Length: 309
Image (cartoon, rainbow, N blue to C red):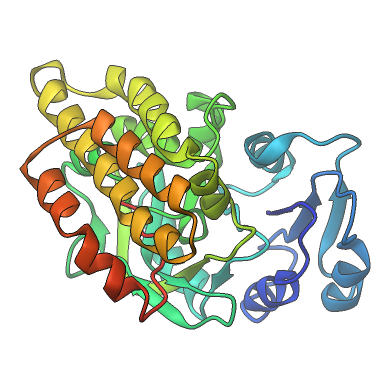
């Protein structure tokens, strides 16, 4: 399921990355779901690239990013649902590699692979840390996913019945609805991990991750997400886990400041620092703060991706 809104720049690449792995209509539904775009109509591109293989649906009104994800879930007909943004990519083998585990274990709630961040030209900027060296279910994953976002949407597939039981993405969260969902799944089901890099999350000026930084919404939404995750955590460890999570959000905010400063967005850079310090002050946060001048000079020499913590 490929949600899109006012953005078909990368859609052809996204569709091709799926179509080259097409197992046939009896095994795979492929559908682009347009969230009532007001420009850059994706339908002609879908018809041309899809050649009748890719379905197209347009919402009669705009539902917003998270609402569109939920609509994709409702429209999906398969047992496993993959929500793939119209600017992201799956690499050859994504579906074939995950399929044996999904078919062999009926207790799995989701499965995801290692992933990379790419830029507008699909140059690899950063690769996620491996969760384990070999493929298999993740032990104690709730503790890790509740502390920091470790999964991007193109890298994960979720069983339909899991969405039906746990509910859809929370619409009150703007940029962290996926993080809360993965934590919710981890609290109730085993999650399978594949260490091969099989998916890419693209960052660019119009991506949601970029826009929330420019409105300084990233910290506030992260804290809203933690409030939603808190009831899922074991009571004895929830305080320590949430403290680590607040530290991760603070560090992420400080990570954004150097690039903003180099773009002469001085006010935004200072606001990121201020909001990060309001979120949590720890030894790691203070160290990151003290290193900001050096990191700002270094960021001026290279393009730094927005990296989830």
